[in-house]
Figure 1 (cartoon, rainbow, N blue to C red):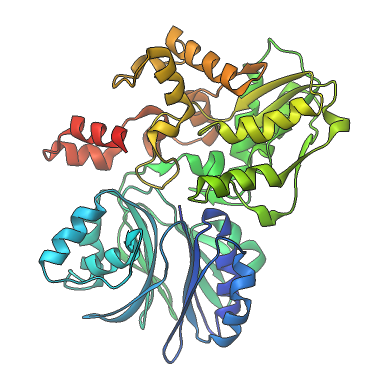
Figure 2 (figure 1 turned 90 degrees about the vertical axis):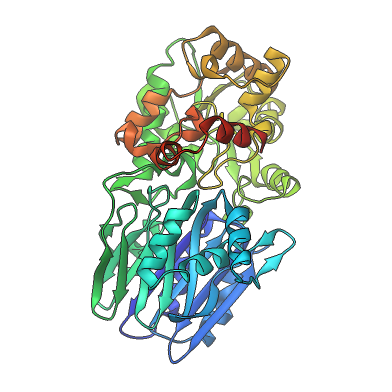
Amino acid sequence: MSGVFGIVSRGDCTESLFYGTDYQSHLGTEYGGMAVLGENFSRVIHNISQSQFKSKFFQDCRRMQGNKGIGVISDSDEQPIYLNSKFGPFCIVTAGLIENKEGLISTLLKKGVSFSEVTKSGTNTTELIAKLINQGNDLIAGIEKMFEVIDGSCSLLLLNKDGIYAARDRMGYTPLVVGKREDAWAIASETNAFPNLEFNIVKYLQPGEVVLINDDGLVGRQPGRDVNQICSFLWIYTGFPASSYEGINVETVRERCGRFLARYDKDIEVDVVSGVPDSGIAHALGYAMESKKPYRRPLVKYTQGYGRSYTPSSQETRDLIAKMKLIPIRDIIQGNRIVVCEDSIVRGTQLKNFTIKKLWEAGAKEVHIRPACPPLMFPCRFCLSTRSIHELAARRAMRALEGKDIEDVSEYLDSNSPKYRDMVEWIARDLEVTTLRYQTIDNMVDAVGLPKTKLCLYCWTGEYPLATEEKVKEGIDRARIVKETAER
């Protein structure tokens, strides 16, 4: 997942753009970029995989000047992309995941469209989005045309002489929020960028909605749709604690998740409640509040510089970060029965090798793992939240229990079924923990506070959100889509 930030101000916007983009840093680790429009476009992109955004861009922002700009923290591609189009020059940043990317590229190549931003990983997704928009008769029509042909998700900010066009993806998988202060308007993926920059939330964009922010303020250009499938994982893990989506704060949802975990966890006695830093902490605080057990920190994170072990594309890098960032405190661990709240279990290898192992080695008496969401069963198709299906801990468990990969996993999705219990017990043995108990779908949905129909739960249920269902009704073979997804 990527994070974007844009601003239009009365005076120079560069300093606010710099900090606003930096506040999206938890959403990606590969590239950062900014583009500012004054008399001309000024654009800069850096690889931030081995350094923080601030250190790479601090000097750049002093050389950039203009009253409107966009920035991005990217999980894969170099951004922003500059295009001198038939609509005039513009810069664009995007967040999302395009499933049918290769097919769209092939179609455009046959039309004579060329691509310049090509690396060893393939054609730049944001350049593809820019070229798709350029197929329309105007910018708004081009954005609508792009929405119609992509499978997956795309939210974007487009900077040109008019201001900043912002478009939230058609099903609302990724968020965009508008803020206002006395001298400026801003739009961001994460609202945690607003308070310290003195912006107040004005509007949460609706799915498919397109707006323009310029010197005159906020202008609606395309109404939203009466449908929403926002990614639930934003509240459970991806989002920053100070952020809100659809008016619902991340930290409070995580506390409610922890309360649910404790409420249905009456058959164990523990001495200490803890959370895996950073995203597991609020879940653990909720568990401690509900259980009346003391919250303590047996594992502490050394500086924010290590970032998230989840986001880097390299497994070697993920493992190194997971190993180095958490330091155990033996005085708190030794002899204690510890509940460890975690946001989720994806592969389980880092939790086992770099968290649980440290607790046992420091003398824990018992280790009880409580993930704040159900077992992850399917790789994300919309936000790069989970990767290959074969990596998922739940799938490894099923493969071990069944002796092969299976297509029908419905019994493993039912938290009351014997097969589900067998799967959880297998994962517990593999992790080498005293007990393991996952959150249920219904409790997680209740913790978020939105109707289930307004949430994307694909990673846990495999049920396709409405956008894909619409395509199924148009004649796409659902079984083929499921098979292709499973083979990724």
